[in-house]
Image 1 (cartoon, rainbow, N blue to C red):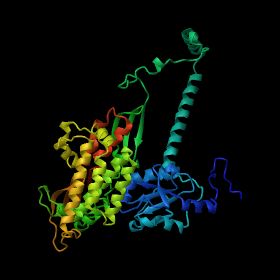
Image 2: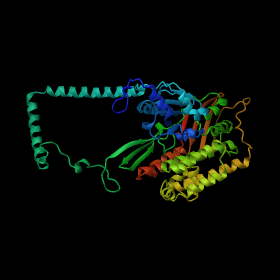
Image 3: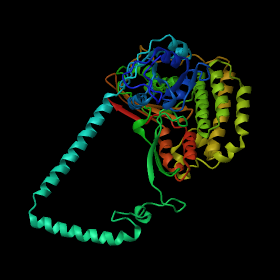
Image 4: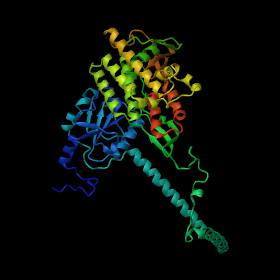
Length: 515
């Protein structure tokens, strides 16, 4: 049967995809998750089913899986990825939110249906199956502007050339004489190199003025981005790097491409704010609910509050496991990544036990290659430690100021979190109470701080005339992001990625919003 497939095994744009190819794609799902696999694992997604395979590159995927909420900038980045994916391809939204500038999805499901993905796609009529090019409007505008700028440049160059032609003959003769002299000089300079009168530039001239590497060699430096969907970095984190070969010269977190919740449409009604903040942070919803409630009911003086609730202990335990998986993924240890992923599955299935956690901890700690590598990485200068809180700070206090120390502290706290949950025996395990709807919140500027898996998080809320006027959210992640440049300088690229992963940077920047 003739399908129109060319010699490269692909179909031209506009070609109708044969039904058997679409059926084949449904049976062999290669999924690229956005903003990253950890976002889906946090909801109980099982990536080790026979019907699908998680890929680390969109080039090898036929399903783009979008987990909401994600920021506007990440939606744009995802749209670019979808435009570049090989066809036939499928687009799936999880969380039922607005996906613009992405096209209409083939399938839109709620989070509790995530493990039914393969069966749901099998019975779905694909709307993105045809080989039509997808060109987001913002990309078309960028290309149009680029073409216009190029045209203006060419036109300007043509006008200058036209003006040159209007010079009188004497000026032309003088220019020709000068050019003749210059050409003669060039010919004399280059005749020994066999250039045949053509320009020649030696390596010395080409590298003149360029910086040298630590080994004394001069190389071209390249700027590149890692993220926002890199499997060895936290979901949504994007790092801009300047590379000299495979050595990192400069690295910084690009806050314009982070997965910062937009939060612009925060509610006026203070009673609605806790739920709004919880929905904006699906990795730590109850932590944000508690933090917002504390901020709305606190005095004007900022205070730190203990977290007795086992709901919050559960969230911290889960986020320690997710951090652990990201670090081991960056290290390239697929065996340990699998074991941690299984522990996350056990967590969601209520099958996690202290014995399993201790076995996992022992397995990780016995990896001598891992210890030797991590001991040399993510060493934070002492004069910068006062900006940091959470596991990084506690590792430094324990004289373990390196990536191995970060790992050991996390493993210890993982066990402690589980022991607290077990000792509670269900006590204080109910969802956290909300605000009293019968009690009016007075006009005030108040704040609160809670301890998360990655460090302290603070929220300040201003109430005016009974309405929320301003909110300001901050965390230790801003200080951690500022360390990236210092701890990655002159490292090999793979070690730099491990350093960044060990910091546990939450994928949002500080937010200050006003009405």
